[in-house]
Length: 119
Ligand code: SF4
Ligand code: SF4
Image (cartoon, rainbow, N blue to C red; front, side):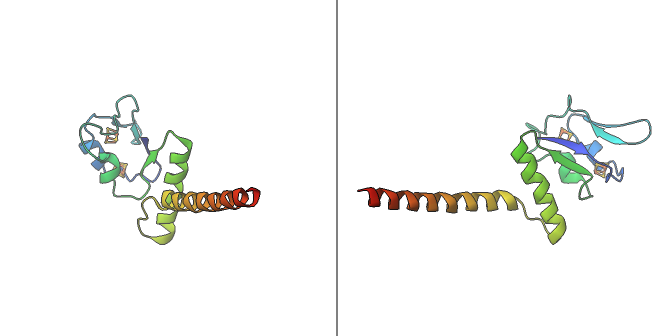
């Protein structure tokens, strides 16, 4: 997982002062960006990424998952947060896990039926 500063950034400068590696930079025209060569995801310094934790906006600093499904879950969790106005952490992951569990139960039941018919 890496992080990206978006056009929603209000240039409050909070993230820059808390970043442990100095990875947050400002362009000459005042835009904030994260140097991926310096960003360590705060591993070893903090348990949560400081830029995300300190950002006062909803989408000024966003996680950019490197894995497709991580990206999908993060994007849709943010949409659910926006729609409901609350933080629904891991909403889609929980939905997906429940759905997979129910599907496996149904497949297992169907398999048992087939086995009993064949016997
Ligand atoms: S995740 Fe941590 S190291 Fe990376 S830019 Fe954000 S505050 Fe800096
Ligand atoms: S904390 Fe958020 S709004 Fe403030 S400068 Fe950093 S990215 Fe922009």
